[in-house]
Image 1: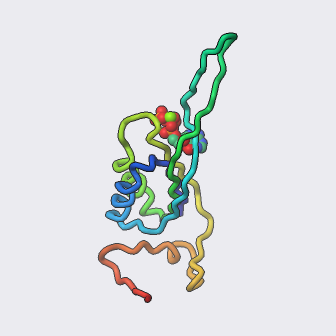
Image 2: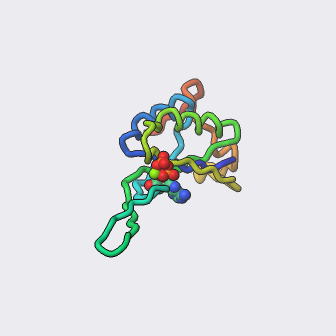
Image 3: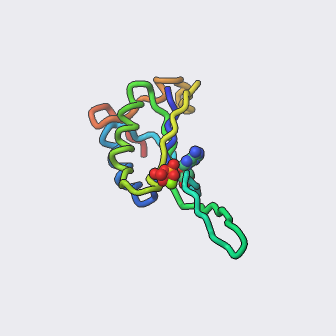
Length: 125
Ligand SMILES: Nc1ncnc2c1ncn2[C@@H]1O[C@H](COP(=O)(O)OP(=O)(O)OP(=O)(O)O)[C@@H](O)[C@H]1O
Ligand SMILES: [Mg+2]
């Protein structure tokens, strides 16, 4: 199991959400964040140079997936989040030790069962 953290442009969120849904990934957490990448904004001043970090609004997606879903999730994010311009974002992949679904007590892969368009869905109202 892996925890995939993707930092993307807010403008790409709708496309990324759709791409993830298409490959069967629907369990995710979204956080609005501010961040800075590898760029350096240098301001020339009267005496010397000063480096300033400008923070940019980004969206962070946290997605826990079972091993067979790691590459499809990464590919879905890459194809939908990329504009080709600097600031497209980054994907971090970390090992995930345990996952527990609170309702049932199911653990690990059983707790991550992605809901695909072909699988049975229970609807609660
Ligand atoms: N090393 C990092 N650690 C944590 N967060 C990062 C790191 N690099 C980038 N981020 C996050 O990702 C966001 C987007 O980064 P960005 O796409 O600008 O990365 P980059 O390395 O500068 O690549 P590019 O050259 O394509 O701009 C940042 O605003 C920040 O939130
Ligand atoms: Mg950058």
